[in-house]
Each structure stands twice: as C-alpha cells, then as structure tokens.
Amino acid sequence: MTARSSSASVPAAVTTALARAKDALRRNDAVAAEHALVGAMALAPRHAEILRLLGSALAMQGRHGEAAANLREAIALQPDDALAHNSLGNALGRLGDKAGAA
Image 1: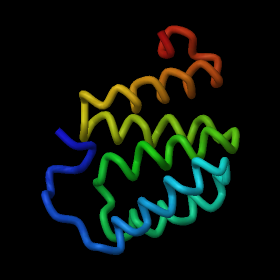
Image 2: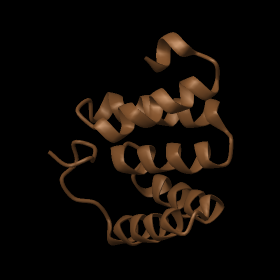
Image 3: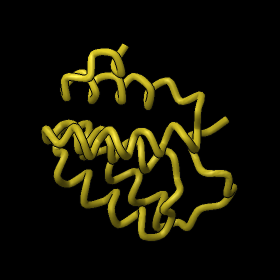
C-alpha cells in the first residue's frame, strides 16, 4: 500500500511538488521542501506522504510540535507507514515526551 490518501489519483502538480520536496530534503533544504509541500497540500490536503514529508521538513527546522501534528495526520491516513511512526517518535522525543516517543 502506498503512502497516500485513499484517493487513487492525484494531480500532476502534486507529483511534481513531491519530487521537488524530496529533492530539497536530500539537499537538507527544509525550507524549500516545506514550501513545495504546502503548495501540494492545497491540492491534496489528505495525502499521507505529503503530511509525512512536511513533518520531516518541519522537524529539520526544529518545529517539532508542528511536525508531530502533521505526522499524526499522516499516520491516521496510513497507519502502516513505518517512516511516519519513526519520525513521530523522534519529534515527540525532541519535545520531551519520552513516553510518547517510545
């Protein structure tokens, strides 16, 4: 199962934005990734991969509370996404929520 919302098709602009965001994250450019992902969310607000990647971009910027919120949404849409669970644990750990991070 892919890390997407239940909708099978997504606009081409979302696919393009995801590619730009992934490239930005590989370059450790969290701000550029966030920009691409916010644009993608306007077109596909319940897309689990967008939410997971946005959570990662926010965490890279030290915005762990916002990251956790996006990651929780991603997990609600795609409960078997191990990357989202791991990223959420890391964000919660950074927030001092050791029990939630475990």
